[in-house]
Image: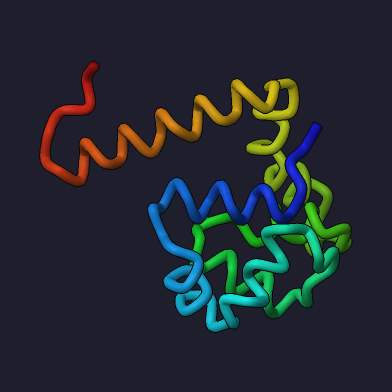
Length: 119
């Protein structure tokens, strides 16, 4: 099962170790609106907001559009390419997805600190 838009936004923010305030500032939206998005209180934000979130959180724009039910622009091949990442994670359990995200955060933190990322 693909994550909701809220879960995808929260995961991306946490992997980047951003607070809600910092992520909202980077996306040029209010922290309250980001909170509503992360809690799935807003089901279909505008494409403009999705683009801002895409740039701020490093999530492919096409993936955010897909998660919110918008028709993806471009030829069918572009739509397929945009969802490859989602397909790779489609069969993961929530626990497996969480473990991968925790590992990625750990790995990036080690790299930022100039240490090898080997366990």
